[in-house]
Structures are given as structure tokens and as C-alpha cells.
Image 1: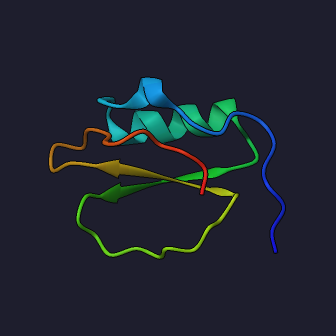
Image 2 (image 1 turned 90 degrees about the vertical axis):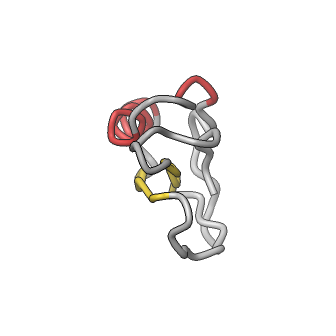
Length: 70
């Protein structure tokens, strides 16, 4: 089982921000995680991964909902 990543765990302030900008911000604020931009509706794994942050975006590339670790 993976250990939980230390540092910031969620980014409410990034809701409504372009996905790639959000991903860059997340990785800068917590270098122990990797942010992945994913289009809303795209199938994805439901694994609980403490080193991932999924940045869900709408068809305009705007982040929805709040990105968080896991």
C-alpha cells in the first residue's frame, strides 16, 4: 500500500481555472504528486493513489470539480 503524500492535498481555488494551469500549480505546490488533466466523461481508474491528482475539465478545458489527492 502506498504511503500518503505529504503537503497540500486539495485545491479548491483551482475550480474554474484552465486544466493545464491547475496541473502546473498543483505540482508546484506539492512536488510529491503528479497532476493529470482528464476530460469530463473520460473513463478512468478508481484506484486510490496518493501520488496522483486528477484535474477534471469540461469541454472548454476548465477545471471542475475541486482537484484533490487520490
